Image (cartoon, rainbow, N blue to C red; front, top):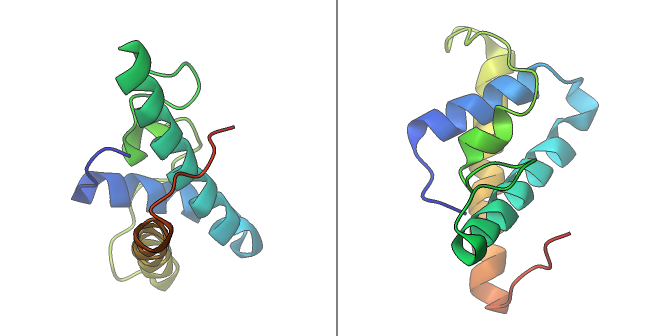
Length: 105
């Protein structure tokens, strides 16, 4: 996955906000996986993946419904931002431990 910036986290959180709470964690994990696979695709073929974009989390999030950014006074939005950051930490930790690559499908 390309380097994650503030805008990537915001875009992913906005996409999660549009989903029911019960499906957010799985959707977040899926976006991270898609961004990772899209980045590998782009490095290999020199062009963005047709479905998942250029390997950034923002490009993957923008393929979904995005609600307007409500601000940090909205506790649901804060929870979505927290979830994105938590799942990024978990994803990076898992890659550190295994030193392997999850298959891109």
